[in-house]
Image (cartoon, rainbow, N blue to C red; front, side, top):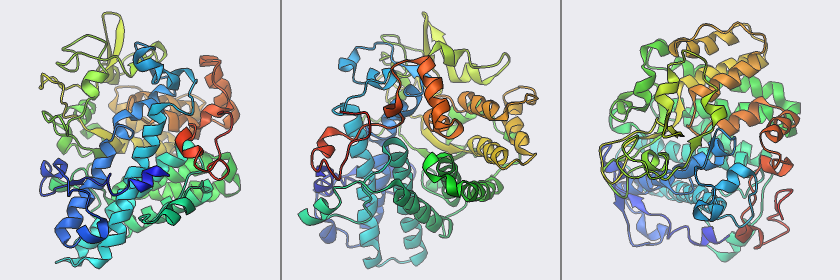
Amino acid sequence: MKIYCLSLALAGLFCFSSCSDFLEEYDPNKIPASTYYQTEDDIRMAANGAYAALRGNGYYKNMYLYTDVRSENTTLQDPGAGGGINYQFFNYTLSTDNSQVKTHWADLYKCVTRSNIILDQIDGISFADDTEKQKLKAEMYFLRALTYYHLVMQFGDVPLVTKELKTKEEIQEHTARDPKSKVYDLIIDDLTKVTESPLPDNQTGDGIGRASKAAAYGLLGKVYLSKAADEDFQVEREANLKSAKSNLEAVWKMRPFGTLNEISYADVFDKDAQEKCTEIIFRVMYEGGNSSLASNYAYIFQPTSQTGLTSQKSGTGNNIPTEDMMNAYEPGDMRKDISCGTSSGVNYVKKYTDLDDVNGYGDNDWIILRYADIALMLAEVKMHLNETDAVNYLNMVRERAGLPDYTGSNLRDAILQERRVELAFEGQSWYDLLRLYSHQELLSVMQKKNPNFSEKDFLLPIPYDEHKLDPERMYQNKGYN
């Protein structure tokens, strides 16, 4: 796959000394990895390059397309914008040559490649403190695991690459999809290494934005829950649920606060308060006012041609909450006004508001894991294991939202509903649907929303440019021509 041929060219590196420097770009003129990486500082800069990949157009910058839009929680204000490429995600008309899918695949593997290069090189580099070397290795294992989690959830079987590919023969060998069972094995192995590393439980100070043990335990819990829900792994469902529970309980014990009520829901998303918000476990960091390092969520999620709602820059009307999403909040739920609003008849997302920069260079981070997510996953796994305290974790989240305790009879749907509103517009919704509905249930639910939805839409298509390299070993997902 040509993305591997470009692996070194794509390995732009980033300097690191503080939270701000963590984001600064540096280009070593594409020198081969085996020649360039000579010192501890070289490896640190390369590690920042791996983190930088998270901000790619095909990674978290457009994660809303692959999750919130696909679940029909959000849509596009102008379906025809950009030739309708983005609207294909909402309308379930994705083609194998969709440019966003192609970029998604490429940017995910860019992060894998950068992580692999560092893991290949780091043991040959002398560090003043070996503990620091082990921390950096753990961070790269985490990034690789996180990225493969998205790959397996979005595409199913995918090429499994665990080293830098240096020759044409190596590239050809890996131009083949591996069974998702092997992908899960790698994810779990990588994250287990992180939990056994010298990384701190939770990152603070200059470490904010980097991997931690809490992040690894939290992602492991989510991975095991996802595998337990996968109908291809039902023989090991009970074991996966128990593993999910133990990892989620481990991260819950690591929380640096008492109850969720101690943390304002608004502070999780306020760009000034979120830097020190202890609920956030892992995030993609941005630097406002910087054209290269800022986020764009504030203006692209703002209604078309409107200004001053979430950004000073004119909005582009992406990720617009559907009416069904707007109506999902219960009366009295204080999260709605923080999460979304309506202007001139158009709904919009408010979680990423940044009105400070006239050019729309936003400072808001993209949150990947936070403790309310962990609480709701604990409710989920305990429900599956028939443990009576499952509802307690659901009620922790409801209490902070100003809502009464849950007293209904369908806990599964209550958890799904709570996740929908608590984690709205945070790129969680599609994975939640895959976990909490059976295959047949989800097919029925989605077809009621849009009759275009079919079996093929559980996965994204393999990009045509990748499939054509070896049509047999890079087989296309069912339903895509």
